[in-house]
Every structure is written in C-alpha cells, then in structure tokens.
Image (cartoon, rainbow, N blue to C red; front, top):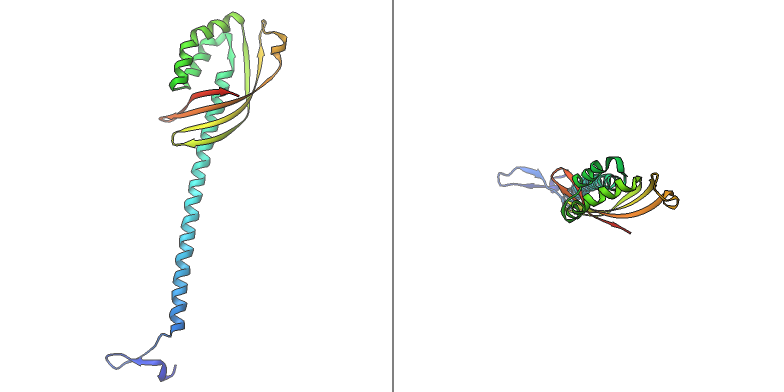
Length: 179
C-alpha cells in the first residue's frame, strides 16, 4: 500500500484507508447474508406450518374414517353397543338427534335382523378451521341378514360429508350429510 492510500489520524498514525469499493463489497455481503438468513427463516417457518397442517389433516381424516365405519357398520345382535359407539364419537346437534332416535333405531335393527358392514374407500379433508374440519368420505356398505332383500345385498357406495369438532383430545362427528 502506498503512502497516498494512508490517511493520518488525530495522533498522526498512518492507517490504511478503506476504499469505497471495499465498503460497497462489505455492505453487499452483509445485505446478502441478511437476505439468506431471512429466506432460510421463512422456509423453516413454512415447513413447520406445512408439517402441522399435514398432521391435522391426517388426524381429522382418520377420525372421519372411523366415524363413518362406526355409523354405517351395524349389527342387530350388538345394536346397543353400535348406538353407544356412535354417541360416544359424536357431539352437538348430530349427537342430540341421534340420541333422540336411538331407541327406535335399535328396535328396527333387532326386528329386521340387519347387519351392515362398511369400509371406507377414501377420505379427503376439504377444510380445517381451528378445532373443526369438513372431510369428504367415500365408503362402501354391504347389507346382510336373513330378512335383507336380495337387491339390498349388493355393495352400495356412499359419498359422505362429515363435519368434525375437536373436544379436548377427541375429535367427534358434529354433522353427517350423505350426498
């Protein structure tokens, strides 16, 4: 470095002068570092948000699957347990309505000696809002029993819109619509 590039300070010492090019380089490096850190933080935040959303979706979909199986798998020999299982897994107006018709439902099952097995083909979360969700479910049911008419013994495919509500640690059905 030549003496022309050095500037004396107040004590008369000669120190190297930072050129404007070096200052721009240092500033650009600092700005680039800040941008990289901000982008990294945003990516980490987005990833954790995505993981949380995936976990919630899986949780609500599993609850809807089980709820539909509980609702559609019935056996006249265990009708009371079937009704209780549905009541335990439901809440709100749906639960009240089901509880109000449960006695008649059990009597009809036992009189007709009906057994229905249901399987869920697929489930997809349509929306999640806080502690509630709407899940679309495709299910197949097969009715069996000595008094079941032959035309009702064929597998039947159902599309069901299930409204769910979290109550504490449990996710319960708050509405069902067959479409």
